[in-house]
Image (cartoon, rainbow, N blue to C red; front, side, top):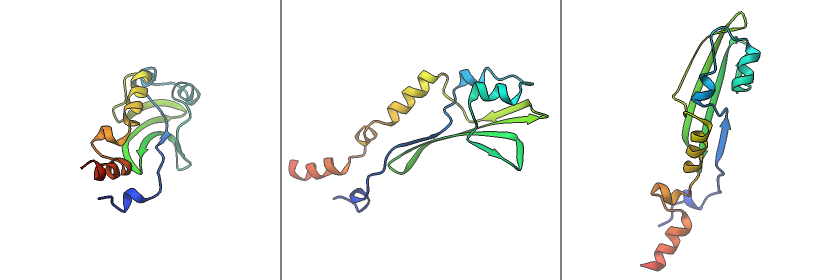
Length: 126
């Protein structure tokens, strides 16, 4: 039986934030300038005027309104130079990152859930 939620508005898949991989992070070195970090990792998603020496790179993948993946990576600076970085486990390469995103973009049937149309057809198949 269809649920009220399945009869709702279609929600698009959303990739939001910074796509970072381990091979990009491996290029970071203590003492790099903010410009050099921006060339390697790109512009951070979050920069706070209250913490100018901290850049936050955030990535989130949402499918049908459900967060499937969320990663944080932070770079810390002192006097405009990198002092350290930390964050969640990242994909090894950009290729692996793309494979991961493609696998998550498969239809919900691949995840064991049936969409509304398949559930509707099941009524007539029985």
